[in-house]
Image 1 (spheres, rainbow, N blue to C red):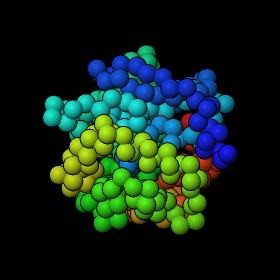
Image 2 (image 1 turned 180 degrees about the vertical axis):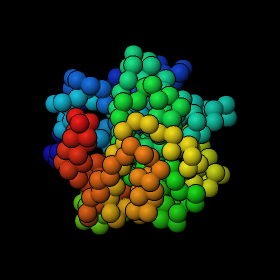
Image 3 (image 1 turned 90 degrees about the vertical axis):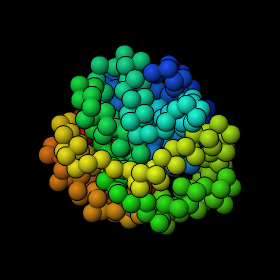
Image 4 (image 1 turned 45 degrees about the vertical axis):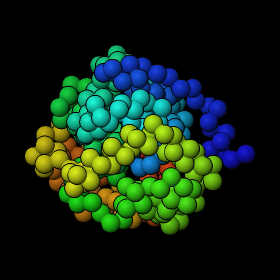
Length: 278
């Protein structure tokens, strides 16, 4: 039995109503609260994206990994009556924090999760202590051709392997159980509806981005983490975050793509813990 499958029994699903949305999260550890927010790829959720980082951070922090609206085991409202916009994800995350009674927390977001964390940091700054943006969306004004396997996931295992090839460095060898897990999550009928609506909104917008002056309003101390070989958020965009956010630092990993938390969990977790403990 592989490490991924072993870890599945280490966490217990918890649920809370957040802005009227039944929201799943997993939690471990004690201390200052840190919320981990997964990205927007097919099959993404709190466990599959963060399983290897949660125990590494939980010896120093209260670690909370959440499923965004439309993902994982969080509710998937009917797309006919619910708009899967970025504003909806930001509102949901803020409501989640309030539902847990968190006055402040640090936010760690990957990709779409990073963009969601940015939205809360700007519109609800009183809720955010520190911010870590890892391969964060928010600056790309185009739908990059590399993302076609992600946006057009066909529901097959081969399609999921293609997604991993896009999102991770070529040296990354995923646990087969992780691939199977993501396929199972992604092919849930309700999840497919929510994911289709989410990707439809992204395509209609032409990318996931905020205006530069919006990002520049971030006041929380911010660590920008990136893989040097990230095809989704290339280095020039990661450096732009550093130029826009005055109170920011950078940490960039070699032989790493878009998934630092999965490709290099020990390195990423150590950098995260150092920054949050400053």
